[in-house]
Length: 63
Image 1 (cartoon, one colour):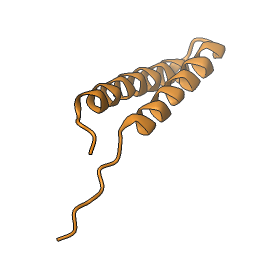
Image 2 (tube, one colour; image 1 turned 180 degrees about the vertical axis):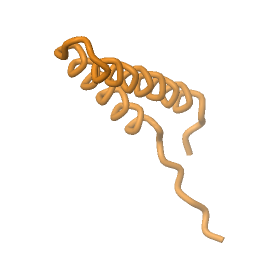
Image 3 (cartoon, helix red, strand yellow; image 1 turned 30 degrees about the vertical axis):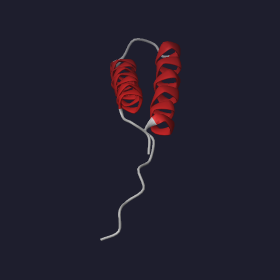
Image 4 (cartoon, helix red, strand yellow; image 1 turned 90 degrees about the horizontal axis):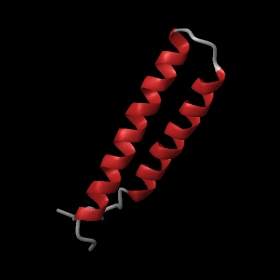
């Protein structure tokens, strides 16, 4: 069996953090509604996932 090349999680973490910033900016422009709440929810989830991926990338040894 061929061994898969290990890919760094840092580029994915950066993408999720950029998406979180985008969703925060979009939500800040909206008036109070369920759309605003939904965008803030997505922004928080993306930010948490991005930070988690960064933490994982820092702990894993690179090959």
